[in-house]
Length: 245
Image 1 (cartoon, rainbow, N blue to C red):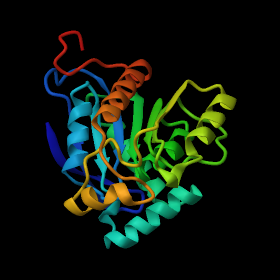
Image 2 (cartoon, rainbow, N blue to C red; image 1 turned 60 degrees about the vertical axis):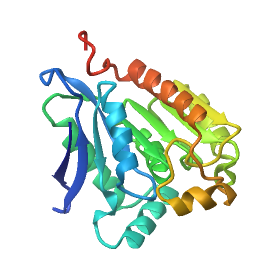
Image 3 (tube, rainbow, N blue to C red; image 1 turned 180 degrees about the vertical axis):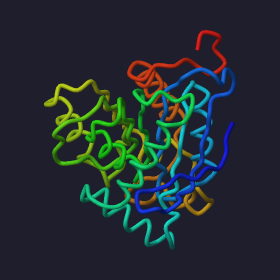
Image 4 (cartoon, rainbow, N blue to C red; image 1 turned 120 degrees about the vertical axis):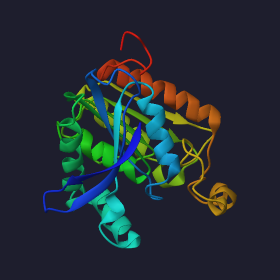
């Protein structure tokens, strides 16, 4: 059950997004997930990830952060926000969270966030807001300091030269906070190991870049199992077709 939606941002802008709801038992109240895409933006791969997570019993919203103008400018603004921790994209994401939490059938007290690449950096920024019950960053930039955080399950590629120090920094921050966490580095892979390449060019050249881009099925499957188990522990819900859900 996947559909295009729009929601109102604080400045009045109507931001588009993709909403994916679990099939069956529409009357059940379920946790919600905010999914923040990678630099390639809204595409079928992100939609497929949303469908997969909805199949586990969560209502998933992907806000289209690149809808505010030309994509290069939107990308630049979002990357600057991830790097500095400040910017209007955070306001848009909070508007998305509010929209998701107010939907019928979504439990506003059980909202998680998952993000990939750029979205992984956002997932860690949002983990510090006190508005989420769990965060799952995939190869996301780790803040130097984290004054607080919700529980975090993080996944990184050991061959990703762009984020060499991020996993250890995240592990240290979360340990100091005493926050439940699971940060894992997959030594055989690089950046974007969870999702298939957005195009043929990236598939061909990705492994030869400093990020060592490339999908790796064994690592992706393991990461998925960890994320689903972590979200189930901290957010609840059962698969959508489970009679007890």
